[in-house]
Length: 384
Image (tube, rainbow, N blue to C red):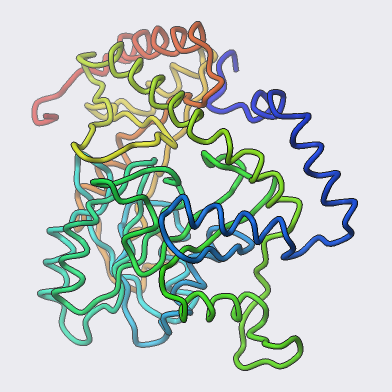
């Protein structure tokens, strides 16, 4: 690809000396699991999120799983999750023996629709869902003020899947600070990415934080005394040291992403057949992805056209969660969550990373225009 959708090597080239020094520092200690680097990163992330506690774990998926375990979610419980997001959000619910309840998304933001969440809580028969688990998709926070109000009214807990949104904010509240817990991923492609897997939970609740710390160590405290069956989910020192180096650059990287997103907006806005991602007033978007909609049913043709022009792109996500084969037993049908299904047909993420050059972005814009024209991807009636 002349322009990749992401290039992690460019970032490493700018930080190589500092990252190599941090890794050597860890190697010289002989301690590689849950040491001083992890403790420092936990404190730094917690402070950034404006909460009291950070707990490093092995992945973003484990962060979600442990957050629900710490809240005693299990069989006979239900958890509301968006139907349009990465699989892990619903997968962890199922792994605990609980049932995911899929909510549709808001067309503009790609995030879960608070009105549909409220409707589900009002109308679902039987035991009401105990947790609402919104995802801050593509780097823009869900409407947490509305969701928090809904959760309080129905006696549900709010847990944030902020895997893609470290540094985002909603009406001044950082991602991870509104719910009972916030869950982050340090997967290499994230805005703050490790060189392997890693994750973190943040919370203001000292008892919940203490429970998570015990659960991540096989439920033991002290060592070899197991009060419950936990799991092995620990952030290692090397990854924490790397992340601490990168954390100092995160604000500059976010600003670079926002600038490149603004450039896309200016050059693609109004292009027939393309809908740029909307902005929500009071929401600070960190652009983990720059995701457009290709209207008129031409998304795959446009994507193929970009590929022939040497431009990388990605489809996040091609199949909504309520229609995944592993959830067929839940009885959801095609057409039941129309906005999630529509998004899966239309979304296309364009190259966006802090090191993307101006000339490369110009190539992307030209290629999008050419692919749209060649694919005749204009608006069809009803594509408003």
